[in-house]
Length: 393
Figure 1 (cartoon, rainbow, N blue to C red):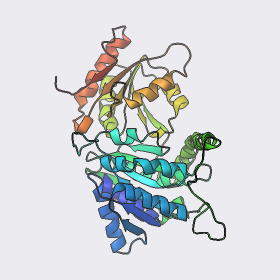
Figure 2: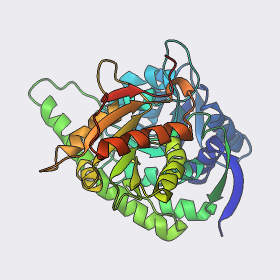
Figure 3: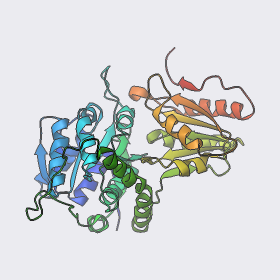
Figure 4: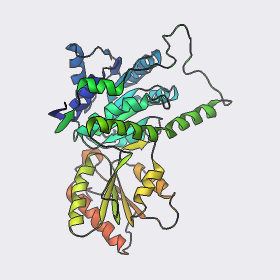
């Protein structure tokens, strides 16, 4: 029987790790993700899990230790934010190149400089091309559910690549919310036993990890990584279908909210999607055919499915909580690429940058964007294709 508790997003994720009981965790604390490890190490001290926790001197060392433990044949996880993920950068590529199914909970926080401890998505978006699966989470419930599902996804024998769960720093990580927990034995059964592949500790079958590969085979190796990622979407949907039978909660590659007949559509990630849904409802009440698409699987990006979901709209606004300086926002570029798969008329695409460094995203911001899209849909002129909203002039 499910148990309902009021917990923070960090506590929800820590409890998912407790229920899974991985073999090894190496981590280094950084705001706002520190509470995940504080909670989890308390479970270790109380004997609720038998995970080997490795205290290291930096996030680079944390990911290095995770790589070693995973290559040795263990189920492994870690967590971090912002500068911590940036310090892991070198090792993120090594983990994915070695096809190690390490799980990382990423509590999204702005990158310095200037120093900022609050939420935006620059850390996760910066890591989008490191070869890791990314699932993004609107709230604490989704972060908990994504954590459980992601072990099954990353460890699937058709994939075997590392993966990260993303949730908004402070907004989700520290806010108290209603979370419905599965029973411990249900989670253990769902995730299953870990199956090592070519473990270093199997002395009867010696293997080598990370060898030197020169131009004769390097491209083939990288193509194999890409081909593994092309199989992720199907596994995500298969695991989600099985999870729905267990929990009653449905997940897909993305959430399409009131999109079926939408003429204007927002594309927005994580916690801001919840705020935007309320405003979409208000516009629907006024007779405006508004809708919203909330990506869940960001890497690999489901281009064809997203294009099919948005093709009926006249105007689409992609909301980015990260910037690509001198270019469009990172999610805008993904949506624009997806829409190129559509033949014939395509929606007008505009880009809004919001919420950098934890700047509040308010209902009036969503309303302002929806008003602008309504005018464009009626034949109005696009004033600018990229704009910062909620910013001082």
